[in-house]
Image (cartoon, rainbow, N blue to C red; front, side):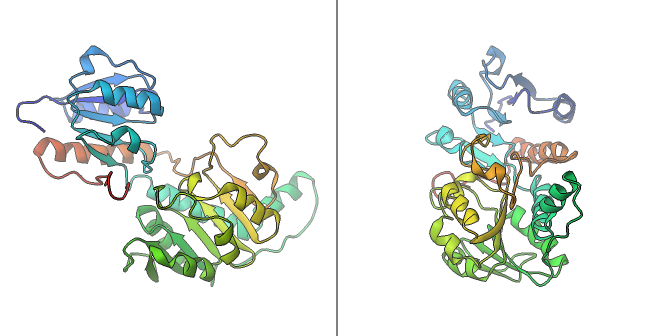
Amino acid sequence: MAEGTIATVVVLAGRVPSELLAHLEGRFPELNFVSVPPEGPIADSARDATVLLTAGQPTPALKETVDALQRLEWVHTISAGVDRHLPVIAGRPVRFTRTAGARAVPIAEHVLAMTLALLKRVPDLLNSQRRREWRRSRPLDLAGATVGIVGAGAVGREAAVRFKAFGTRTIGLRRSGGPAHGFDTVWPSDHLEDLLIASDVVVVACPLTPRTKGLLGGREFELMRPGAYLVNVARGGIVVEEDLVAALQGGRLGGAALDVFEVEPLPAESPLWGMSNVIVSPHSASASPTVWDSVVEEFAENLTRYLSGAPLANVVDVEERGY
């Protein structure tokens, strides 16, 4: 932060609970926190802001906010994914950070829950219960299965640790490869085909970037083991949805648990709603009664770094990698 500057932190209203905003005000009494509605406008008292905490603001309103804050030095988003922020931040000489670890555990728990639900045929059991039918399904074992996780970041590592506890083999994929906690092995990103061929369950937990857009399509689904399962908690754009529907309808894949989609909310006419081997959740994998505390704490730690002139954590490589 520039010497002698008083940082104004703009917190976008409607997403940050008031008690957590009060926590930030109490923790940093020397700062001026201004709450701005998600759709704007920017109050005059906020126009000298050097720090922006963005909490789910619509993209057009986010651009208006960033453009209005001419002294802006740092933008932090409460989300782990940053794909929609990048066009807004590009070209501005600001540092950009994201929430990395706060959401990892609840998302990892969601991944494990959805995988078990698919393997143990929970949707079939619930359908039989609603019809009052005494009908047994044919569940599969998670123990002994191979789980491939595309993205060995915070979410991927937390998921891998939980899968290992169930006796699985865990394979990860990330740009550099190399060892990572919870994984038996982590391959570099050019080994995607090997991961797909080897895995009984494929978990998508990587960021959406120009390199990963449409990463999994018809060809990739053909490489997966017959009857394999897909769990996507990353971004809908990583999966070619039309190809996924075809693979599910054709019986190539055993099922899918999807928390993210190309269009959100998922349109009512989407065939995914009616598939008995698909579990749809409304982009809610990170939901947790304590997640906001963790999100705000992660931001507060970075804010302390900012005020002291220390390097920020979880900086997004806007130009090179997009995360």
